[in-house]
Each structure stands twice: as structure tokens, then as C-alpha cells.
Image (cartoon, rainbow, N blue to C red; front, side):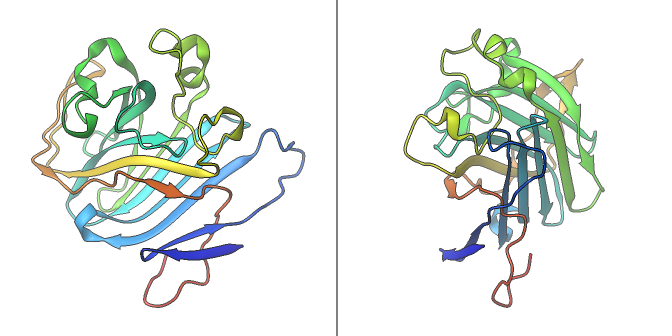
Length: 228
């Protein structure tokens, strides 16, 4: 395992072998030990299970956070992208994640992508303990498929990281994401689709590509007082 300290952020990578799985169908992990109250969370872990085409995102929040929105990329910044990635909106009160095609031109940082009903993808379960722990596990096979994405863009990717076979740029083995936690988010719906979100209590968003995605199941040892 390799660990390096980059701007007070520990990034770890480790190679693992998975019995009965070929190298063409790996699992990719990411772990970030942050502890930054200005961004409303203290820890993030994520994994993309290629055999099951499942994306998992889990985080521990600071008190008062009741929602979030998220875009996961292959390592590039999503700021200038349209119709390439998925935007997820997490509603802790209703324990629900709603997915739309991400459009950076819609609202600040593209956070209002949900306002285009034609880009609605689906609604999924969110695990939330009512306190500080959030998690979703979403099967992405359909939303990542060319058959689904081609109606939005010829460059469609969906919701995935760690896939070296579809990289279009030099940033190998990276995960990029836009992630913003919300307080008093007050999600309103019309059927399965989001009608409105209150962003007035939003924390400062995490919006830059982060280094390394390949298999960091743990980041230990960490120098005190950082713990994860």
C-alpha cells in the first residue's frame, strides 16, 4: 500500500486480487479522510464494483446535514461537461436518491440539473441513520450503457470511476467528483421527479478531481490526530 500526503489529504492505493475474477472485471475503491467542517463531511468512501456494475457512495456528515448532490467522474473536472455524467440528489428526510443527466450550465456548478425533466434517470433508495451516516448502492448497468446514454450524448459515460478502458485523457487511476452537502434541503417532488431543492443551507462544495482510485480499502496508519 502506498500513502502520500497531498494538501493534508491522505490518498492511498493498494492492489488486491479477487479470486475467480479476471483483471478485466475489477473492483475500484476510494477513501478520503478529510475532517473539514466547511464542506459538511468528515469522511468519504466509495467503490465501483465492475462485475456487478454497482456504484456505492457513503459519507459521514457534520451535524445538521440532511441532503447532498453528487457527480462522479472518471477523474476529470465535470465543470464544463454536459450530458456525459449522472447527477445524484440525496434526500435524507425521504431516504431517497434521484438521478438526472448532469448539465454544468444549469445553476451554480450545475446543481440545478434536476430542473430538466427530460433528463430524469430514476429514483433509488438512500440509507440514512437520521444523524450523520449516508450511503447509497446503485446498479448502474442501464444508466452507463451506450443504448441509454446515446440519446443524450455521443460521449456518454454515466456513473463510474476506475475504468481504464474508457479513459479519454491522461488522468489515469483517478476519481473526480462534485459533492455538496446540504442543510434544510427541503426536497419537494412531483411524482418521482424533483420539483425543488433549497440550497440556501449548502456547504462549500468539493469540486476538484482527487488523486487515486485503485483499491484503497484502508488508509492506515494515519498520522495522529487524523483518524478514518
